Structure formats: C-alpha cells, structure tokens
Amino acid sequence: MQPRIENIVAVLDKNKAEAIEVFDLREKNYFVDYAIIASSLGTKHTVALLDHLKKDLKPAEKFNNIDESGDWIVIDLGDILIHIMTPEYRIKYDMETFLTSLKNGREGEL
Image 1 (spheres, rainbow, N blue to C red):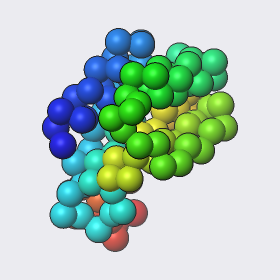
Image 2: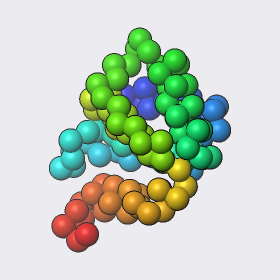
Image 3: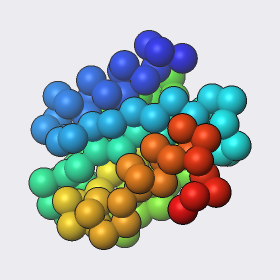
C-alpha cells in the first residue's frame, strides 16, 4: 500500500498541491483504508490536479468514482479516498478534525 500512497502524494506535490495529509484508517471503523487531503490553489487548480492524477496514476489505479464540484473533488480508488479542496472549502468542512478523531478512535466525540 505504501508505494501507492507515496505515488499519489508525489503526483500531488509535483503539481503544486499544498498541505497534503495522509490518514491511515486501517483497522478503524471507516469505509477506506487511507484518506488523503490536499489543498489546491483555486478552482481551476483543483480540476487540473484531478487531470494530473488521472494521467499519472492510470492504468495502475482504478478510479471507481469521481465527485466534482470545482471547489472540492473526491476521488474514490476503492481503498483510498482522495480529497482535493480549495483552501476555503478545506477550512469550511475541516475534514482533518473528523479524520484525526476517527484515526485516534474518538469518532463518537464529534
């Protein structure tokens, strides 16, 4: 699994994604093993990061579903979920707090 995560992070980093965080959720009560969150520089950059991931990860990765809004894109790779958000959306929805509490076994405290 680690080479897959490292590859995803490398693609995001190479293409100027910011504040990339990886959450290891294996053995937690969540539907994926890993969640990755990255900030884009804006709406156009969010879409561009998706395009880079598609280009650089296929055919090794299977994109099960992609939910696009421009400000927030969620990519479902089955056991990995990638969230790419504009900084405003990242602050507004604060996925880090939720995933950190889940990772630390405190999902009921939200």
